Structure formats: structure tokens, C-alpha cells
Image 1 (cartoon, rainbow, N blue to C red):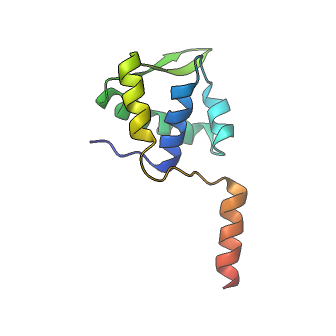
Image 2: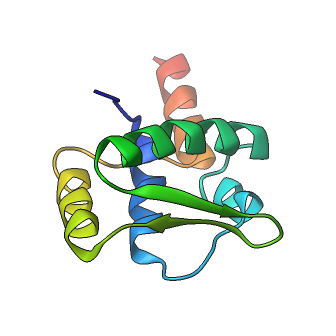
Length: 103
């Protein structure tokens, strides 16, 4: 069974609710990571999606999107809503790091 990080779960949740394509660059900006990191995350997301009856559609020049039947998509969203899914941005991580260093 594939385990996703919090950021990967958040990214997959974003792909679940978007109807159209999302570019790797726009997803990378949204999650405050490099395009290379987002591509790595998308590989893990794709494996997880395939394991759960869905897939990631990739179209050059357009981007990526989740491809799933209505039933599979709903089941996948339900799985993603379980547990802690908070993803912290760079500013929040830096603030926590500064606080910990001050202690």
C-alpha cells in the first residue's frame, strides 16, 4: 500500500476537486516546492491513485488531472479526508523553526 505525505495528500485533494488540468508549475507554486519536487510527488500520487482505481492523466502543454469514475473519485476523496491533512507553507515552517531555535 502506498503511503502519501501530507503535501501529496493535499495535492491529490486539489486534483480531486479541479475539473480541468493543472500545470506542474502551478501546483509547485501552490505547495511552495520546486517543479522537480512536484513531479516526484506526482509519481507517488499516481501510484496511490492507480492503487485505488483512479489515474493521473498527463497532457503535454496542458498539465495533469485526476481521471476517475464518480464512485472511485468519491471513495478517494473520502480516504483523503481521514486524518490530519494540514500542509504548512514555507513562512509557517520558518516561523516554527525560529521559535524552536529561540528555545
